[in-house]
Image (cartoon, rainbow, N blue to C red; front, side, top):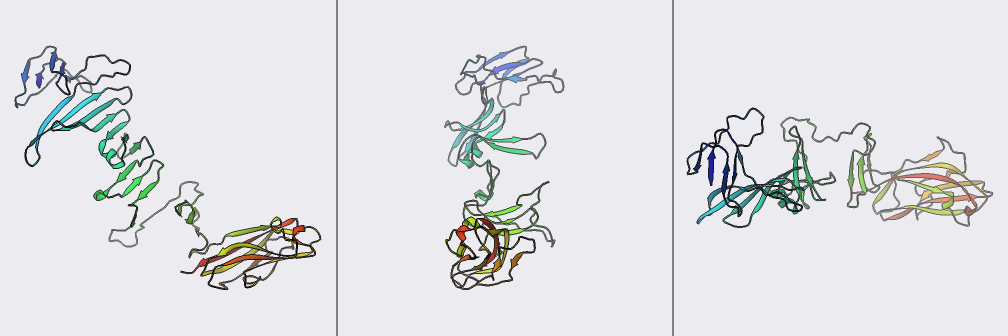
Length: 370
């Protein structure tokens, strides 16, 4: 290798690296000296502040053509490391990989004449590193830093996880391309929120709504994305029926559902699981039932033990009003076994299949005992 000592002009040097022969092409210089271990300094005293002036240039003078970009010669930094039994040569190459696509400044590593490993590439869109490739199992990983620290974006060119934090080499936190956050490994405890301060009364976990938030602040979902429990934007905690948070699903029965050619019709609402308790029921007419020569209509809520196992009869022929509804105050079960809960509809004056108009809403609140 040759180091050129300059006084005031730019020197163009092509160094031997990756099969290129060494040559020196220089303007006016004070001296060209071999690097023998003595410290050498390249100076250019004519450069002014913030002026971009080359002090040392490694140049590929062949012009690029379509489909044939020309890389720069490499700057080779060579050292020796002890592998436990002998000395190994460790080379680092810094290359301008001129490309109409990547425009990369590349850092490659080679040990004892083995294969070249590209470890870092500075591109037009960020920094690509092989250690991110290793974590995710595919290429094309970038880290892009904004103008003001600590703004940072980790970007992938595919649907792979964009960022993974691995304390002690185990999976910790992963942020996906769709902004989903995964915590912990696939088994065991995935996340713990813990207050490590000595002060009592600190808030440990906060979910804050954005301006104009109307959706749920938090949801617990099953593996099919079905909501099991939620906290609304107004602070209402809801769970699916059957949990140990009382849920009150609403069932709406319309006249078109009552197709029996008779005056009695049982309309199944749902199946109550084993060891479940009905804690309350509300029945409210939405539209009064009418049609044919119907003169009266009622509904009660029951199961196989009785049509009125859970409520008395409610008049659904009467006019609709805010105070016209049936409330119950219950904590009632007829058996520990699973059972179908139904509405027992009774008509007077005509059969149900002649009733053309009407609807009733039935809220059933229930829990499953632990």
